[in-house]
Image 1 (cartoon, rainbow, N blue to C red):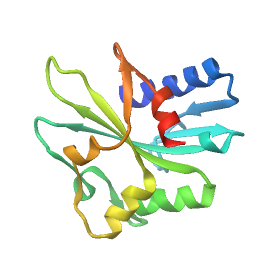
Image 2 (image 1 turned 45 degrees about the vertical axis):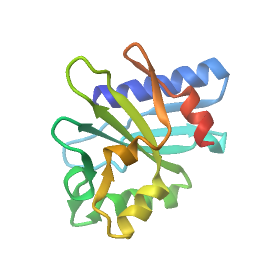
Image 3 (image 1 turned 180 degrees about the vertical axis):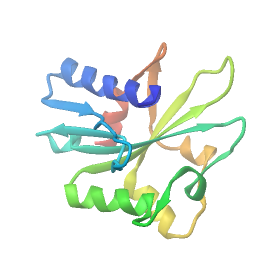
Image 4 (image 1 turned 90 degrees about the horizontal axis):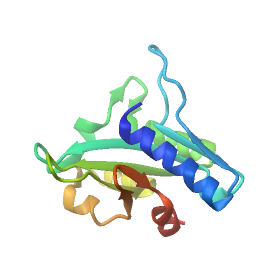
Length: 158
């Protein structure tokens, strides 16, 4: 599990505790020869928090775009975007792509939450991905010190 994934899981669980919401965020253990559908699963009786979240990190010093061909995998079962989309539809979850922008030494990381349907639309339109500027147009996952705080973000995407 990456630090970004761990931080988001902890942030969701803190949020649920603070708001007294029945819910839990977690990452399923990944085994060497089995794949996982998404990075983070969030379970709750509240449908607003029944989520599937794929995480991607992007170093803005070496790339100005999140590419579907470079940052997502392709397998015998098809492109990762199609596999995740199938999982989101079958499970009834709301899907999101959380993108962390690593902005270099001395500059804090920033992360954004993109609704999954926007990712699928862009992919199916034949686009190459999302530019950093386009990513910044989506709701930001705020940070306090080094910890992400999903509170405001989840209230924006409900």
